[in-house]
Length: 408
Image (tube, rainbow, N blue to C red; front, side, top):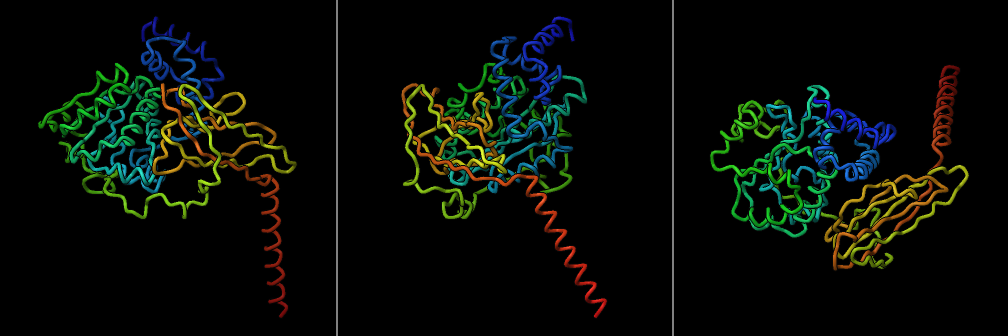
């Protein structure tokens, strides 16, 4: 690493501050900081606020704690994120010949119109594995993606699906700048040009340059670019899955989700009837805040904040504190088929905010209908003490019963 690069990294460390770096162990190494410098063209004014937000997102989602020993464990973990995970085809395939994380997305095997009614899944956790390879190999590595479009048709060109995918791509680029090494697109349908025209503006200039559409001889091209030993036979490799499906391994195969997996108000204990929701209008290029004051209660240091809302169109939503820190990451959400709901542990005696942000929209206002509630949580220590008392009482009764049986 040349001196000029070392100097830039040292300057970036100074701008970020030691505390922020300690709070973001995922990026607290020179190779990750070099990625930020490359991704934002050494512009510290762009890097620092985005780095701070990435740190907040990782802490709130506990990504800093997520490390996996192998790819199959990672794929198994993603299956636990949502009951519909198996119907989002793809996953982590392994590593390419340079050590980059190799991901596979078989979009043609998905059914976006049906999946939109079941919920969605985020695979951002898999990117944690990049750090393990970087520290081991002492070089700046990243992500290589194979997108297999076999089976792609007009049903995949849903507005909702494309919006969610575009928002996810933008978020990943913001959180993991300069992490993309190559995107190989195979079995491309002629309709793909329409989809790519929608997605392309979201990609950074650096990312666009890394998209390669392969022809019918993609087996040989992938073998050359990725390494035949790293590919399953289906994609021209010689690798055999160690566990899971004989052909797919632990990759998610996809398919048509059953109707019983669709969102149902009757099976969601957090569902709130529309008539009980509060209406909120968020004008274009503005945001609206719902202030929540959590009253102090002796013996109840924490409460559970629950929220539920629907919107007329996509809007950025998250939960922030008084310091504008994201406690629940701000993501672009659509609720056309599935409402947005969730919960967060909050401290009593403090103020929080539900943030509905429409600043990205130039002309369209958004109508939000929302509800929230606070549920007291018993003090953890008191709860543990009560559990100990109960166990001791049960043990005492068992001892008394044993004595009676001996005497009898």
